[in-house]
Amino acid sequence: MPNKKLIAANWKMNKGLVQSQQFADELKKYFEKYKLTDTEVVLCPPFTSLDAVNKKIAGTPIKLGAQNMYFETIGAYTGEISAGMLKSCGCEYVILGHSERRQYFNETNAIINKKVLKALDEGLKPIVCVGENLQEHEDKLTESVIDEQITVCLSHVSEEGIANVTIAYEPVWAIGTGKNATPHQAESVHNFLRKKLKKMYNDDVSKNTKIIYGGSVTPENAKELFTPQTVNGGLIGGASLEAEKFIKIINASNSK
Ligand code: 13P
Image 1 (cartoon, protein in one colour):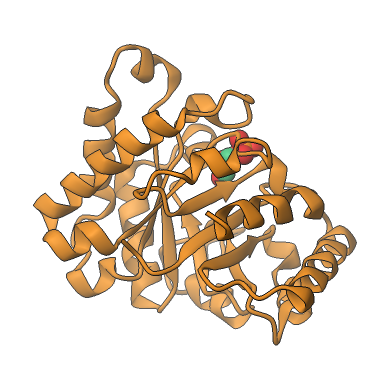
Image 2: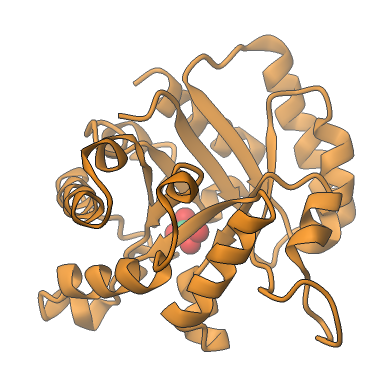
């Protein structure tokens, strides 16, 4: 299993500049007191706060990530943000293929694949989101949906590249609904993902790829959700908006 777990805060379209900075200050205080030995923490604020948060977290182990990016390098793409721009703001990570991007902005697996390849090319670490929606879940299509998502999203990603990819299993029915997957459900899908990685790559990739869970993770359920060995951390939405809650989730991961 990967040597470190990862807890990432996806703030989505929340927090302006001042709120983002306040949160970073609070989290910094925590890191002044505690040393995390086996968990990496990533903040993914909106684009408009990346630079400010980067300045706040300088000198701490907290890492910065973006919530999306475009796959072209430069040019006339009004409103888009490139990998290079993210790097210039201090990003190490980028979330790609979040279900909200798929649902509201028509991102397909093929588009996400282009983004993954570009991110890796530019030295960013993609957090690639996969997961089935409620209908697919009820129709027991989880594995076939995820199989297709992984096949296409990771197409042409080399063995060297995959070492920098984190996969986030986020069942769409669990996102923002308060209805989290059970640890057993998460474990079973994570194991399926590892089998898939073994087929696409090899045993080492299957064992060493970080696979995190997202969907209604809270301070109350985090410890249980992070218990299966195959769950290597979490992608946190709502509960990452308050520093106190987010810190409790970090603690739940670190003390597992
Ligand atoms: P919630 O934690 O609010 O369910 O959101 C999960 C998510 O979408 C993280 O990317």
